[in-house]
Image (cartoon, rainbow, N blue to C red):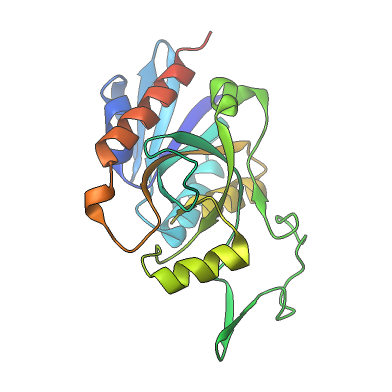
Length: 226
């Protein structure tokens, strides 16, 4: 089967793409590459949960893939994770899904709209695969993530999210990727490089180039495994 590499934006995986042989466009947003005799399809979904869910579902239900990898950058709540470090997302969730009740937030479980272990969730979480097809990527530090529509940059909101969900990193796509993989019964894994800490917006503290370089080095290491 073919490998599918999913990214929200092309710059996040641009260094890796330079190492691959471009073979052609398959469909909108989906391209075919080769590397050392291996077929690799690359899907660029666009930013956010909606784009990720729709494009990943379309592609993995039309073609056979094993495995499927979501790669990108992330912000970290956890200061023990170094900026530039590449991590493996073990669990992800949707902490914004719910309703406001004055100053309180009620998630979908408190609202009675879903059970915490209703498919594809396990205790409110979506999980990545621990399967052998991911080789060296499984050795990356496992972390818990949240997926959001609006990345955090307000100190009060950051403190509230830490108290409520205690995440280590956040992205805008990860949970949607895991949800689509679970529904399609496809083996998927999410790997992310930390480009910044989650704090009041401070672009001066971001290290995008370093994070993207480290992410792509790990992806290339994976592709070079026997």
